[in-house]
Amino acid sequence: MTQPESLAQLLNGRRAALDATLPTVGFVAGWLIFRQSIWAGAIVAVVFALGLSVWRLRSGDKPRAVVIGLLGVCVAALIALYTGRAENFFLIQLFSNAASALAWAVSIVIRWPLLGVVVGGVLGQKTRWRRDPALLRSYGLASWVWVLQYVVRVAVFLPLYAAGEVFALGVMRVALTWPLIAACLAGSWWVIRRTLPPGHPGLRHPVTEPSPAPDPA
Image (cartoon, rainbow, N blue to C red; front, side):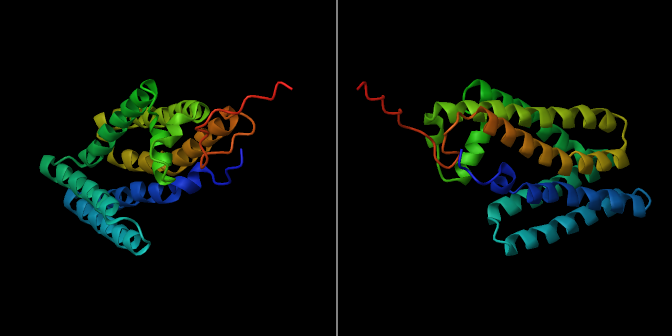
């Protein structure tokens, strides 16, 4: 296997973790500093998200992805403000993790593992990776690592949300983002490296043609 990059390099895991944690830190910090004011938490979270969006645009990220990230923070803040419950800032994250666990599991079962879809898209392969049986199998096995990641988050977030533990939700949001994304990327990359057959050219080079038969002579 000659592929030099890891999944963390291909998928930019550090930036994804930053997007997921910085507005949350802002919300909890504002909520605490201003005596559990949801308005303060919401304003700080949106300000942090705006700053992060400007930085991402200057770094060359696609505007659509930046707007979606900013919109998610704004909607989470509005839900908390509308309901008057600070813990509802985390409601979208809770539902998105549950939905992601289900979507990733279903994708594996129907043989369209989302890890392959994502990495194939990043590498500009479209669906060519699916014509490589070895790569398809490896992506499927490695995608279970991502299912586990989302299940772990739901199992931790749900009881804290039910108890209204805003500070604990913020702490666990950070604790289960940076380390868990790093572990997930490393774990799924390890699975791919272990399950691809020896001599496979790697993620960038799906083997879509059958190997030539050996010369009987």
